Length: 165
Image 1: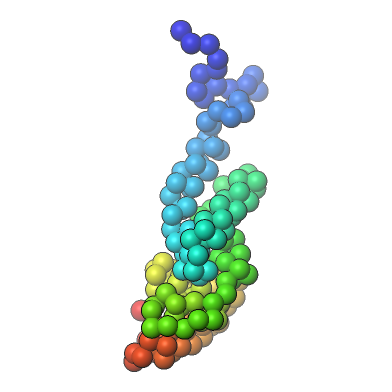
Image 2 (image 1 turned 180 degrees about the vertical axis):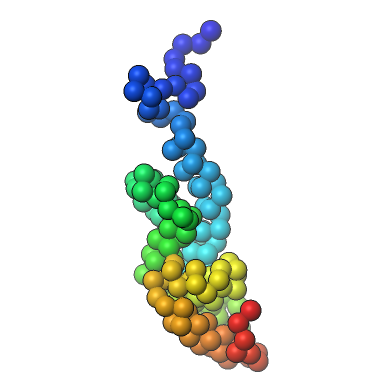
């Protein structure tokens, strides 16, 4: 027989012992495992640097953990974390070099256009969700997408259509 509290041990008041898995910790852990990769990838596509992208995603998850009692009850806790990471990514993003590489072409776009393009075409997010993540209207997102497509087409020497997918 081992000494110490069993996994899932509870205090007399019914709350989980600190440091032991409980419903709150399991929920956060599941969110972290499910969303860390996609959020990091999105941040990378906005900032163009994996190290910075990892830091942005991790910082967003730290905030989620700090506010977990509120975040866990949201309709989309992952969306809340993504919004923090994306908000921080446009604040960090820079990139003026233009080459015929898609990644470099994305980095040459203004930050809002880049974030809209990345979220819509690479993360497959709907316009309404992008508007929520970026804190703007759906009309603004559509404008960012249209301008971003035209800018990418010019940078890459391609034709562009005005249709949203």
